Amino acid sequence: MTFLKGETWNGQVYSGGWVSPQGGTAAVIEPATGAELGRIGIATPADTARAVRRASEAQPAWAATPHTERSAILRRAAQLWEENAQEIEGWVIRESGKIGPAAQFETHVSVQEIYEAAALPSRPYGDLLPSEKPRLSFAERVPAGVVGVIAPFNFPQILSIRSVAPALALGNAVVLKPDPRTSVSGGVVLARVFEEAGLPDGLLHVLPGGPDVGEALITDLLVRIISFTGSTAVGRRVGELAAKHLKRAHLELGGNSALIILDDADVAAAASAGAWGSFLHQGQICMTTGRHLVADRIYDDYVAAIAEKASHLPVGDPASGQVALGPIIDERQRDKVHALVTGSTEQGAKLAAGGTYEGLFYQPTVLADVTTGMPAYASEVFGPVAPVLRFSDFDEAARIAAETEYGLSLGILTKDVMRGLELARRIPTGIVHINDQTVDDEPNIPFGGIFDSGTGTRFGGTANLEAFTETRWVTVQGDIAQYPF
Ligand code: NAP
Image 1: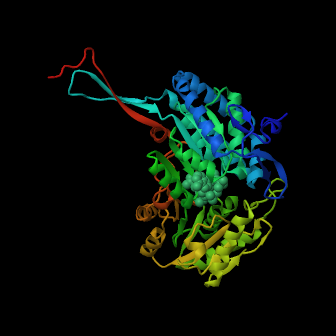
Image 2: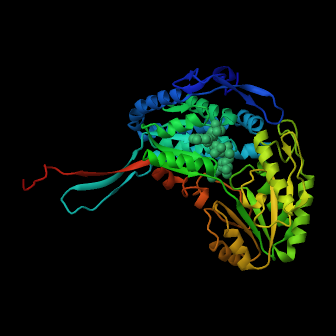
Image 3: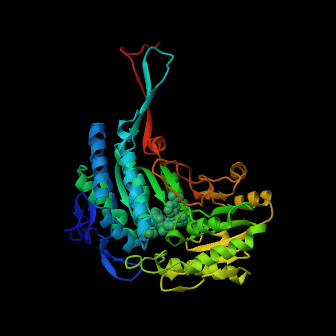
């Protein structure tokens, strides 16, 4: 018997135990082979409404549970996740096409996210406030009630647990809608872990389903906060719906992050960082390096070095071999990637490496002689593509890096770190790394983007406390207040 117990979740969703949803089942497909790995239950809006009601009934008792007990359940969940890491990583590799080391990184961060969340229940949850009247006046943070979490496929564990764990820790109930393509690693894992950890019944619901389930969650009156991670287009729709229903939405959206390589940078090291930034997990990361801006003087050397690297990276099934890149998640996404690449070559970009595919395996691709209007440069590709653009001076680098609707991450490679910091100050993003590429994450850091990359930085202790609670003003005095009438 395995921890994830396929016989339990096959065809079922987790909502007050493992139950049959009204939406039937869908195949869990391994992108690398096309094999069916199992069948996941698919929820409907009616299932969602039931789950939300149940969650809201269970939540008050959980909020009243001593903080030590809530913490202990979260710590136990983290331990279970760690103890079963190998099995969980196996699912991540097969379901999302991620290579082993990236799956291990994902598991590691997810476990640490839960430990960070386990520290939240014992933190101070309010402030004593001065009052003009003789009374005790304070602001306290109270659980919001039911939190809805909607997550994408690319880092299914992290992008679910980074909201689910702090929301639960702070006394909320949670209804999670994972992407149906990664419902095991981004859904069943959480359900099984918290089930075994002893989370009281009804507090966590995992409902794989389509946009109708997501929208049912957003519009349900009992759901007070939505935590959404996904594309900017869908995020906009989520934000509109949430605003219409006057509820808070945390939106973690797309990116098109620049890596700026100044003329004093070591070209070989820069090409290695750039290749990692663009090709890790086939470029399917919100922080992926989507734009390589390289100083004129070293441009040709950089293109040659990254193209050389790209043409030697092994691409294949991550479950059965030592590869650097696995498959793209599905045909629709692969076709989108290819259209952006061919659209750019039609406009004059030069293919320095890649540009071809077999099935879902897309070769790491380097585009040279890129200009700012080309589709692979101007849009979020979400595939293993490195468009390389030339700049002539510091001011031009700052200007073109900032010319994007996104604002997630930024990398600057230079021997002069103060110059790097000066450049960073001129380019608005939520994250910046001097002498590193654009992809990184740690559970205790403030994470988030600006502009079309989302509604602002959160995660990390204090930010989570604010994200998943409401503030209440409370006053207390010994006798009833006196009034003139
Ligand atoms: P997506 O299409 O926006 O889907 C994300 C989630 O939203 C899925 O669970 C999806 O369900 C659901 N959804 C779709 N339409 C919905 C609607 N109308 N209402 C509510 N939920 C809805 O994202 P994706 O293309 O799969 O994921 C990649 C995107 O996510 C990229 O743009 C990437 O940059 C971004 N991302 C951002 C971060 C970050 O932290 N900033 C992290 C990772 C990824 P279905 O699959 O059933 O449609």
